Length: 132
Image 1 (cartoon, rainbow, N blue to C red):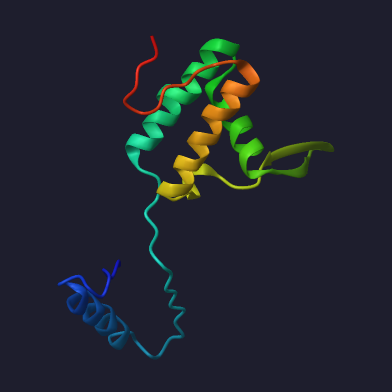
Image 2 (cartoon, rainbow, N blue to C red; image 1 turned 30 degrees about the horizontal axis):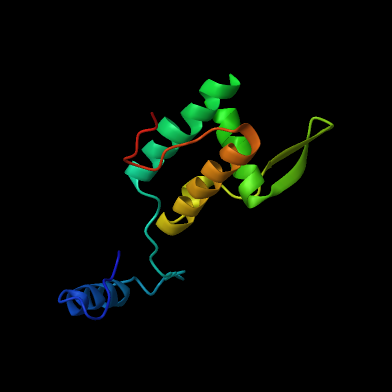
């Protein structure tokens, strides 16, 4: 359940609903209740831009697979973690992009555009722009 900010007119309603849920728990059992600050995850338009523009342009230029490009960019951005698989050392990004909030994902896309420009000489347009 998401409880809106205190200034929201529905704040008291949702706060009271959450408290009622707790009050209605069967106390014969132990309960683990977790509360965390709500953060809006990356948006669908951001995700579509990342895969349909950023990753696609880099794939078209390099001939690489889109999943491989995304994985590489993500690892370079968040760092790498090494792990062993069948006696072979592999690496994977330290975090996944689906865990990013709107601001962090935009920062990632900005970094990807900069990386492509510096390392591949590719200009990737901003959302809504067209490169001629």
